[in-house]
Amino acid sequence: MEVEKATQLALLDVLVNRRQDLSLGHKVYRKNTHTDRYLHNNSNHNPDQKRGVIKTLVDRARRICEPLHITEELQYLDRALQANGYREQTIRRAIRPRKPVERQEGENTPPSGVAFLPYIRGVTDRIGKLLRKRNIKPILKPTRKIQEHLRSAKDPRDSLSSAGVYRIPCFCGSVYVGTTF
Image (cartoon, rainbow, N blue to C red; front, side, top):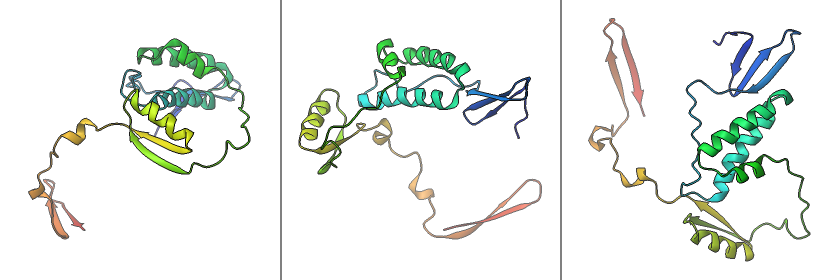
């Protein structure tokens, strides 16, 4: 159970504070252990994923923060994203409010197909552009992860091959009985 401290209470990503007039204020909340580590701009990921990091953080700030705190939060994000290798110009472009874009006639046609491609900087971008011209939606995924190159730490001999009942005694004298499927 969370208890209010100094007229503030954290709830998920929101820090709610009680004002003297008993109204409630709110802004983005981060735990003390938060490290501001996000997907680094130099990582081998699709640029859309990197823009998505910025957009998600900015949208979260705009949804959660009351007008009194939005400038402070956007400045915080600017510093945190620059520390993760993003250029100031890229961050400013994402923070700037956007006008809705009007679509041209025929732009809303669904793609005729989908292509899943591993993201390789420079190569996949060009292939994706060609696919979009032919009304095929490219879905870019990261290349193999380090985890895929390593073998499992679990010993296959230790895994249970059939369902059963097990019993675990406790030092206090109680016993836990469970089942596997």
